[in-house]
Picture: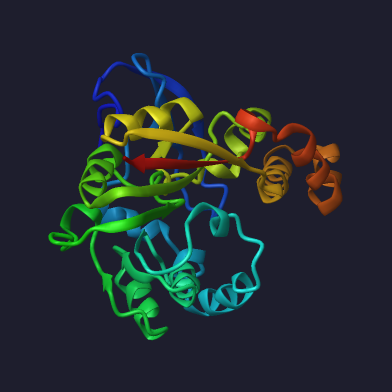
Length: 290
């Protein structure tokens, strides 16, 4: 289905790239376009909501309950950047796209009253099986949030999946309490790895990712949704370099990338050298409700 720009709503766009599903190998070629008015990148045409579920296999990480249990054990040991972003304990935290609940488990142990929104019924059931009861099987538009206010709202790798992210963010701004914050992570479409690997960059994750953000377009969308100010943080992802190298090898057979793909140290070195500031692999936006 063709759609207008999710940021400025213009229908004036040009082809940016065409790529395969390099993550799971589903058949098809998928197009990303660039809006000529605001530079937003988005998948167009998009897979319709009634068909997109077919592109999420059982092993998809956010929906895998066994992986959620293992991951929750790991993140309790600390060292996660989220610990520094949100104050500890006592408030209400909403995780949008909570998957099988690993992040919410950890936050509940830190003293938060936790809530989750998860459109996948299987993933939501998996979260409830971990003892997380305030999970809404819904998208943002239909979640029963009336009467609720939240101190922290998190969207970890979620904005890239939502068909209409601006409307969703506007709704979330309405339930963000005064003094609260929204924290969102997305792959950086302007990263060094994205520019180096082109259609083989794993951050495109087509067709599951429908929106592809740069630091400028992510900040613009959060401001347009009504958030008062936005801080941008950066994160390095060695896995983007390893998976990009692997996809390039599959497509081209290039011997240099074959060597790099097999070496975690070489991938880590590339990430450390190239993934700095606005060219880092992942964006972390902190938007404030002042």
